[in-house]
Length: 112
Image 1 (cartoon, rainbow, N blue to C red):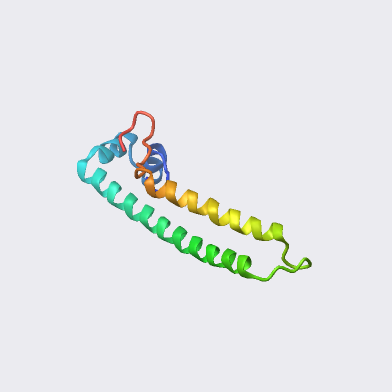
Image 2 (spheres, rainbow, N blue to C red):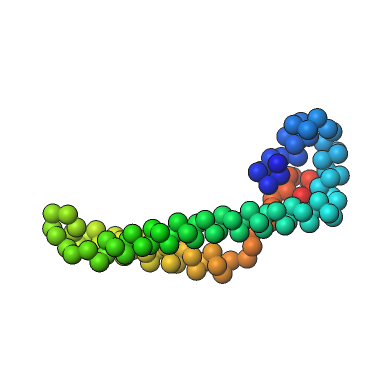
């Protein structure tokens, strides 16, 4: 529930326990560790899926770039838009690869 963005209050309500109980669970080192492990797994899965979709999109854009120009179907502007998309995606990929891993956000005043 925490990895899906649920608040401690909502978790307590859904499980039928007191809010204090949820705080105690999230203060346990084993629970913190498990949340970190599962968060990393979730992030890795998302990154892998995005990478696969990005590669497929880049392949399609490259096919557009390599098509012969025909003023009726493929204009120079369309080719430039495809090239720009590829360059933008490359810049984004480099920024994501160079950024530090993200951590879970805790509720205000609540341990993660």
